[in-house]
Each structure stands twice: as C-alpha cells, then as structure tokens.
Length: 113
Length: 109
Image (cartoon, each protein chain N blue to C red):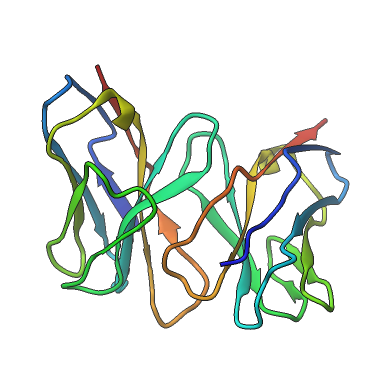
C-alpha cells in the first residue's frame, strides 16, 4: 500500500495564480484532511471531509476550496494564490471507526511569489 | 477542546528514557490524549493515545495522571532517530485535530 500520496511535491506560483493540490489514499479510509504548516509552527487544519460527499471548515479555511472527489481522493484548490499561502501542505486520512490515528502524506511545499 | 501546554524543547542522552510532559488541566471526561511526532520536514506520525488508563505500544508508553490533568510520553530507550517535534493533542474524536507548537526533542550521542 502506498498510504497517502500527494502531488506535486514542490510548486512555485505567482500571486494571483491558481492551482489544485491532489491527495489520494489507498487505505479505504472514510475521513480525509488538509493541513498547512508554516515555518516553526504546528499544523493548522484547513478543511476536512468526514466521509465521502461531506466537507467542513477547519481552523484556517479562507482562500481555499476543497473537493472530495470520491472515497480515495481529496483535493485542495487555491483560486488566487497569495504570498501568505506560502507553506507546507499536508494531507491526512483516518478511519472513523478508530478514534486514534491519522495517516499523513509527505507534504507539498508551496511558494507564492 | 482542552488546551495543552508542553515545554518548547528538551534534550535526552541516547539510550536513556525520554520523558515528555504535557499539561491539559481543562480536559473533559470524553476527551482522549493523543501523541504524534514530526521528524524534520516529514508528515506527522501517530505514536499513541489514551483516555484514562496508561497505555503502551511498540513505540512508547503513555502515563496519564489519575485526575487526567497531565500526561507523560515515555520513549524508553531514545535513539538519534527519535529526534523530532512531539505534539500532545487532546480531542474527543478524530476530526479537527489541533496541533500546537509541540516539544522539540533532541537526542544527543
């Protein structure tokens, strides 16, 4: 199993450009999450999807949109990138029946100039 | 959700036990204590979780005080590969985990 995969690994955008970060998991998990991590700080939840067909805002949703395409895939879209969105983005998934463990992807390092 | 307080940084000698404390004095009865760690630039990794009983797995032990207001993560024989940021999180379910700044553990030879 690949676990949680994220594409791309690195991306540089200019202010105002748009892009979509892709996330997929092969563990048949119900829930998926998007976090951002700024330098020297902990992770902050952007959006999550408790199950296919549902999405909810986390701590820092402004400037982002998400799509739970199917059970495997959860994408994060930046419609008009800003320098403040320069960060490392992590996707995670978990099984709702186990109150314990989120599995994280390797991250996407995004720089907005 | 209960807030947690952790020391900013700690050092530990290789081969010794690393004891990482966490205060969560406002924890409620149905909230679990989770520990994750993040090794440089990687995604966080789950370590252990507990409700009120002490827990042990292949990675670590979790000791929760009887009043549940604090806990300690114990890495019994720390290695250089255990150098990481350790996050203590209190949450009543698995959604919307709030990661604080964590404790930066440095294991020294």
